[in-house]
Image 1 (cartoon, rainbow, N blue to C red):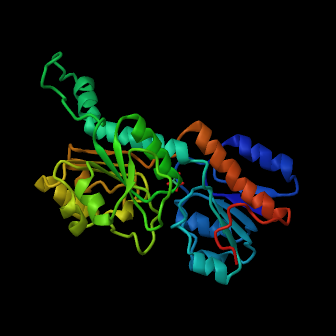
Image 2: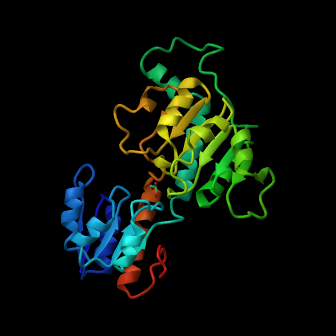
Image 3: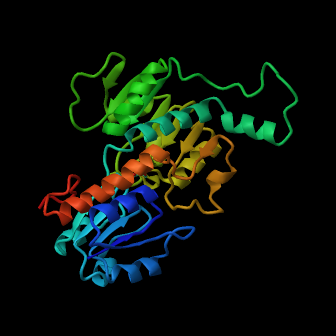
Length: 320
Ligand code: DGY
């Protein structure tokens, strides 16, 4: 049996795999940078199981190259890099890593809000480049989170963790999600989509990327936001139409944005977003903590191990 691992996961988990299943042959990516599509297709040929990163697209083409494949375990909660229908047609199991990256992603979401609202990027750049001339009463003056209204799009684990943190900053929280949410904490209200857009000071996205959420934030939805509002995206880039976002920011109909994810990653050099000082851009680091990346790798392995032991993987995506 051969397991391939397409990214540089914590070596402690490689060790754990070797100890728990000495019968497995492991081939893992330990070179700098990301594995190319060509390499991925090549490696897949002999794989019985795979631990994949969100950068690997598991589609029909890949499956045709991987005749022995039985399980693909994504080291991410998002799985828009998987063609679930194709996997199901081939009877290949698919899993993800929910739960373990909630806190890290929530922390980064709040960090982005603070970076944009308190103009931290600008302030740090000014100091670092030697342009800081001393304390001035009107320099780098931003806004406080306290008293502002946070609008959450989606109310899964990460949104709930953001909500808790936002409340402790003294924010009011509005939630938009299709299911009825009961027992919301004081200071939190479930509202309609229109009400969410019209009243949020900070709009933060916490839904998966699906055909329904593709470009959910577009010209029309952006036009409903307050000109003083900011947009935060730590979910998936393609939920936002970046051209429409750049237009809104340029026209001043939206005050700022904090983005950790992009329609195309890495963000193209010629992206207009790079030119806009009211935008904070981070390189998809929501889950990038030692603790969380270790937990993600372990969880991804636990799913494979369960399968190898004849059990149901805990995070199975296609129950049939
Ligand atoms: C995920 O898990 O989907 C994040 O985007 C990366 O950790």
